Length: 121
Image (cartoon, rainbow, N blue to C red; front, side):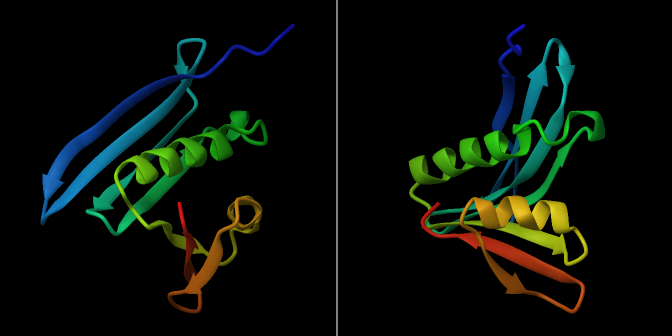
């Protein structure tokens, strides 16, 4: 049996604060939300992904990469030069492997946190 395609709920201007246009994107499968990502645009500069989460029962199915690829396209459409995945725990090896597989480079923030930048998005 073929897997059902993801449906998307997005709000590209979920909130505006401090010159930032916040966004939310949610992948849905068979009427259930399987994840959520949110962050903001820094106009013409970067697209900052503050948090991405995929339901633990739905991981390792490509949904995280699909969300990030969708966000990369949105960043390109908005003229951003970089997509930044912010505040990644250094101990989150599974996420780090995903980000590196997508071509992201680590930028240390502290001994326990780093960001990952994809340039161009």
